Length: 144
Image 1 (spheres, rainbow, N blue to C red):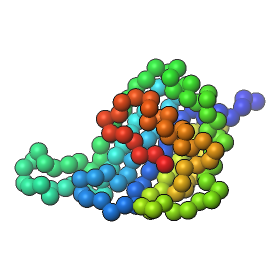
Image 2 (cartoon, helix red, strand yellow; image 1 turned 45 degrees about the horizontal axis):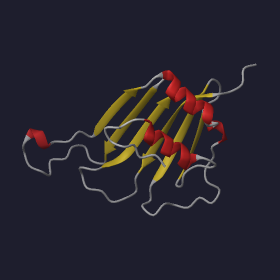
Image 3 (tube, rainbow, N blue to C red; image 1 turned 120 degrees about the vertical axis):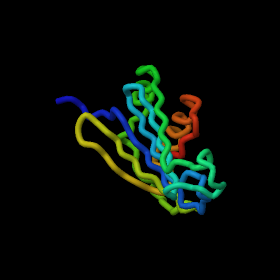
């Protein structure tokens, strides 16, 4: 029997902060061992026309960016971190801004889902930092 290993994960961060219409309130980041990072940002309103009637000022509800890296770069991330060891923080408290996250870990077996307010233990902050430093993003992802 083959051991269960993670081959992709998705982190959805939902900000609880009060935001203006042009700010993104939700960020979903998908990372695959096959070399794909996809970030999707959503606004809390359908369309914002607060700047005037000019079509150039309308902002879409959702913006997605996809990045393709060499397989080996992201495969190394999956080798370094045992994602299946992640779990919600033991001393979970709601964040100051009310933000929360949900994480799905896709495996060759059963997929895992969990959520929280603080970065997951034991290496959630380190993983988030590593993801942020992998590439220059169009918009830096919101993670934990």
